[in-house]
Image 1 (tube, rainbow, N blue to C red):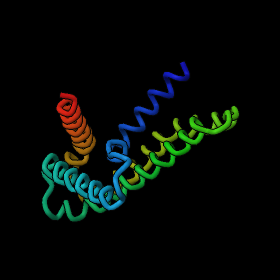
Image 2 (tube, helix red, strand yellow):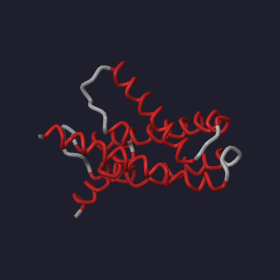
Image 3 (tube, rainbow, N blue to C red):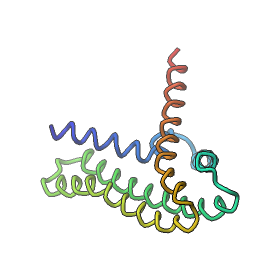
Image 4 (cartoon, one colour):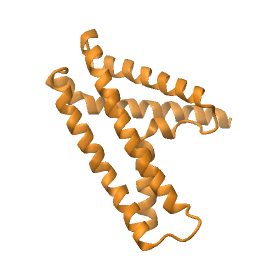
Amino acid sequence: MKHISNIILTVTLLLSGLSVAAQPKNIPDSERQKWFKEMRDYKHNFLAKELDLSREQQRKFFPLYDEMEDQTNRLNQETRQLEEKVAKGETDATDIEYEKATEALFEQKCKEGEIEKAYMKKFQPILSKKQLFQLKGAERKFTRDIMKHHRRLRSAQRK
């Protein structure tokens, strides 16, 4: 049962850090940075359209939004590194190491929520109440669209 829980947590972490997880690992850093920039620009355009943001709102909102995403991505990366360190340790992990890694996995979502809640307050002067409400739905829609596109690409490659 613990193994299944760990798998579910891993999948959740990977999906929450989609921009990192979806990217191939064997490409040069310059290409990786280009990919991140393209993905971020695409997401900006997507959110601007979904939320019907004015140019002025975009100018103020996206630097803050990018800060928030950078913080949550760092948190996700640190959590994944700890998980990998324990899971792929050269020696058997101790119960204490498992316990600390498990706590980090479960606390990760709470910390991510705290980051998002803090930024929600920063977004309030920029976005209307309706736009702020629509933000999480637009983020989920963006992720669904990216996953759908990724599945189509994978199925086309298999043929």
